[in-house]
Length: 265
Image 1 (cartoon, rainbow, N blue to C red):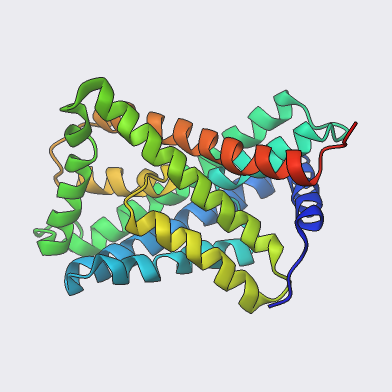
Image 2: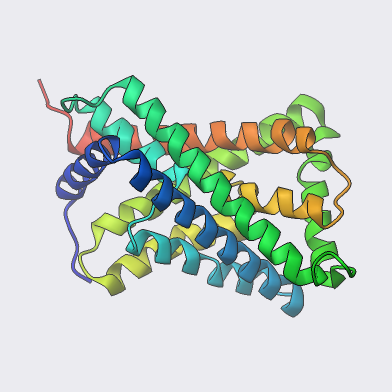
């Protein structure tokens, strides 16, 4: 596997972050919409495999397929721009400001959400033949997953909230390593291998990914999960997004930038 040295792939990540700031609104929304949709399909695939085979490990091994596809196609996840644009901002690239960072994050969030919701409604329609039948074992089990990861956390109060926050941090760390992998290797095979490992790890360990959850929890509600949208937002999406952001920034962005790119006095 051809490999770039850290100082080289960090510079490439900074360039990528800079380019995303100046991407058009249309392109940003399209790319993030497709990323949310592909990752949602990958989540359905992995959960289907896990539930039907009784092997969560097999589902985790297969889940990274979606992540790899969307990054090879140049699409954008919120957890990706959480890493790339701060690098460009720290490097003081011309025109890269906090205002443009927030604008990009907002557009990518919206695109990821719309893509995830599209798949949630399409798959729920398929599972129920147009909402005319019971979703079956698979749909019912996914609904229970939504309950356990909202109401289940709320039963522990503030400690439950911080538990999911830390799970989000660990996920953000692993996903950001996957993003590094997408530029670290120079061959398609190499990129696939390096991206696969951390994504498989986070899925099997049950870490929380904000974009996966944009699909999983609305889908769980449609399938009859006994929790509300406000439960999902407060007890899952908010701590997960904050954790994803902090995990990527602290464990990947700051460490790579300070040790491999920052100018030394």
